[in-house]
Length: 236
Image 1 (cartoon, rainbow, N blue to C red):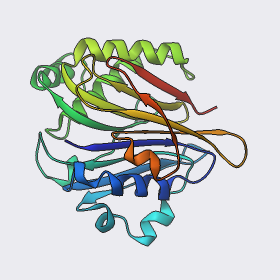
Image 2: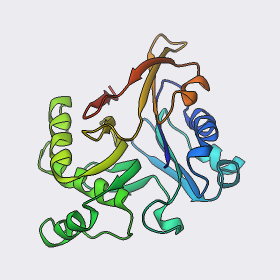
Image 3: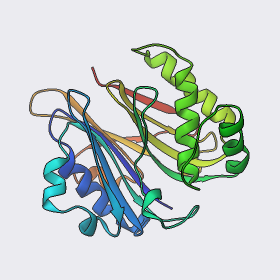
Image 4: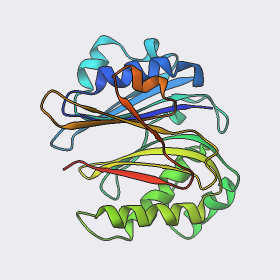
């Protein structure tokens, strides 16, 4: 069991993600991490072993600038407790994709082998989160567009479903493109979504493992992301 959160806002999201992870701490005490994106596409990552309050110091929070981001608290149900397996995880191609994941794949070894032998992708950990990340990246690479449409991105999720079997709730930040969230076709792992109107009139969105996280930022619960459902928030 792990906790995930994704946030799209017109305001800095670092403190809001920190607060959300703090109330999701019961879902994982092994490691924590946050990735944020600035308007120019610059990504900033901070992660490490330990509780939320131990991992993120004042200087770290100052570095985590940006109005969109994802966060994770980890309980190591697969892989090891190595800091290398703390999330978010990142691949630079295509676009630059950062990902947080809660769940387990039952066919992780088969997919990992196919990623290496067929897709020519090297995985650096034993984490099945890295497996899902690379499947998503490989399938998204096939779109061959600098600006993939929401329809193209959601079609890629169908390809991920076809390859990855198990229980998973995923939030991915596609740099400069948008925030993507999806649940496995059986809906085994939880994922909820909320919204709020921000001071500038823009709508802000939070996606998280539990509705308790939405309360930290006064987001109105829209409901569960359903089994086999994907949500894409265009950064534009």
